[in-house]
Length: 192
Image 1: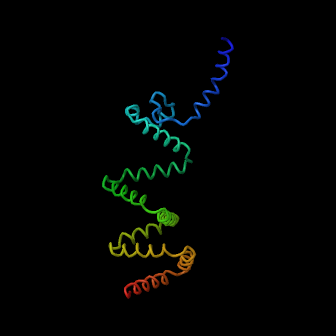
Image 2 (image 1 turned 180 degrees about the vertical axis):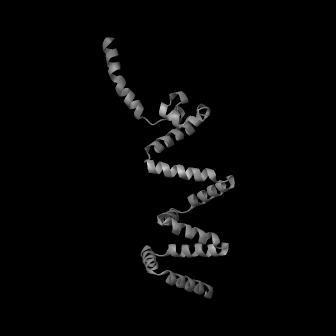
Image 3 (image 1 turned 90 degrees about the vertical axis):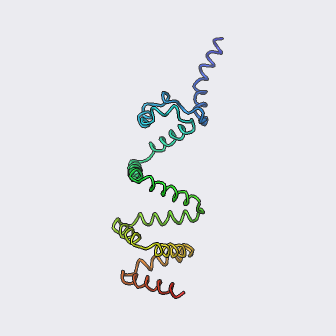
């Protein structure tokens, strides 16, 4: 009997390690009392709701919390700022954003990648240029915006090398040369 007890006691740490390595079943999501002190502190606003939440939701919350805790401080700050901007939106604006996000998710992968690339390009602009572009966009009529979107789609269909060549040419132009190029494009489109 002593030998069996000793063998079991020696095997317990190994068994505990093996069990800890197994994937967590959502049905086994911990109750509030099973969370560690840091988790309870970070999820404090859910104290009254936690145990009533479905296990899958609790598991998602814990996974999200683990991802949050692994972020560097600057990414956490950016996320906080985005969240504050989200909370400042009206319910109607939030609904509009949810629709946009859903439409984006329905796009083909290459189109999503193109849009991400354009967004990153915009974010890399100096704040003054970003604001200038926002102001121009807001000043446009819906028809003008549609025309811009159409031109952007035409540009996106060009081979990457040709797009890069055009970007480089554009960057070398003076503001007057750019204005003149835009006017020529408009005239050519009207003539079609």
